[in-house]
Length: 167
Image 1 (cartoon, rainbow, N blue to C red):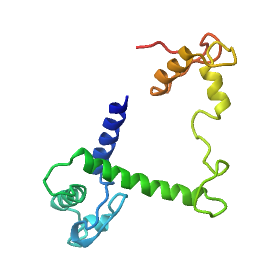
Image 2 (cartoon, rainbow, N blue to C red):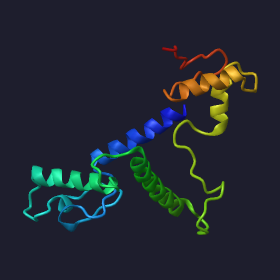
Image 3 (spheres, rainbow, N blue to C red):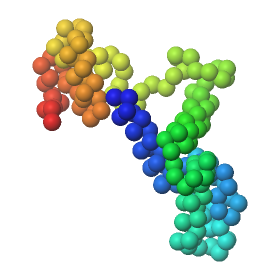
């Protein structure tokens, strides 16, 4: 399970680099961009009003070079993890800034954002408690874990509506 999470982290980081959202300190033409997609002006390095294929390739190479901290032309797991970690730190700082109602630079339990998907914890508990016993057995716990990655949960006693078959 640990390996699957690490592989997912690497895949996300690699996808981010290829999509143009990776960190870049000095993009083409001296236009840097960090943690966001490049603007047209950043990609149009020569200021001609058109982005050429060569400018797109140069921007891609600049993003890659920024993550390739040792300059060996390949991205190691450590380099990808460091890049992903920097992005997570940036998103975390933005989250704190957004939800920190009292301005103390930290989030209390009351300030934490509410889940957007799946509702509150009572609804989640009800979904996991497939037999309606008021408690979650080890089997229900494991079944919920297995289906969580696919967004499929049993509903109420015996499964009922929304029950899914295992593949």
